[in-house]
Length: 452
Image (cartoon, rainbow, N blue to C red; front, top):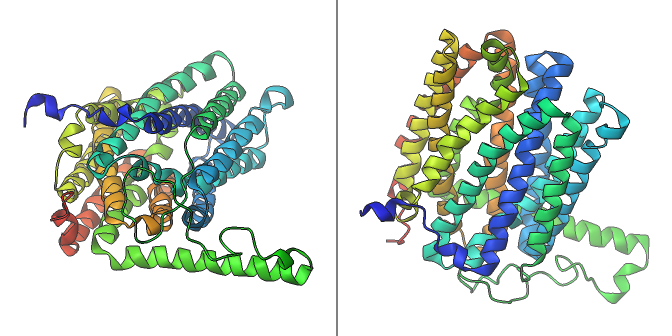
């Protein structure tokens, strides 16, 4: 492969609607990363307890799981652009509510964590819809490149956002970080507003550039219109709500069943869970920062920025991934590299090697970007469009709630041991489980973009 083909493929940016999706991802990611640093710092400052830092992950994971699963059926029966607008608007309002600390004073811990959970719930509702945008707006051959560019924006926001959050914290307060978050999400809402309608397609259509088609939904149920006489009595209203609820649960069960029976999807998701549930390190950052840098809020941002440096490096050379045919092999190798890098992170933290800690986090960030890009592309290409919303809901729960539950695990274990021991144990377990998944799900390594 020529050196130029290893560089990130910018072809998707020629599509105007995709550029809006890309801008939305950049703005939302930047705001969320700034707010994440503020939440980590505030909770640690209020409690000085690793269990409560880990509880941030649990507070985020529960709504991500519950509302992410709700968002999947919504994406398969409603206009996906509209669902994304509702959820992004709700995220922005929750961010502005967190910024209310500027005038009300510091919130008590339950209020702070409650608003963080509300913002996660809104994010979860719209995530399955947002995940379908790339495969609808781009031709099949550009889908991996489009996903890689979105990953690059995520890593760029991780690089700039935590550092910016640390600077804002050092100069002003957490409330200003949350204000930045709310405003950035408001601009992201405006970017989505310019997209065309994106209803789910009937089963006969294949994925590709967007075509205006009405959603296939049972009359009076998924469409939300109902029969003219349904709107009168409480009994009829209750019956209509029950029909829609039952339909949503059927769609959700179908999505879970699709993942369970498809070895490519099942194996890819299990690999991701091995990396996130067992080895995710973010909850350890405030404690390691306390040990290595005396708890300086400016250096706390460096931990997340180090992950992003590696992610940006991998994103800049994502042509190696997006132009490859065997994406499954790439994901397996990336999860293994993630585990090895976090093993090094734990060993460096144990020995007090501050800059080596950041170096291993950069390697982990590169591995994470490669793993997520390859997994997301496989999910988009292996799933029929009419099922993409509900399967994307499962992907969302695994991809985002997995790290949050992993953070809760890390905080709990660190409270009983040390951050370094927690990181080493998690990395070793991750490598063992990932090896078992790769051996029992050989269809993952055999997956081809070409479909052969």
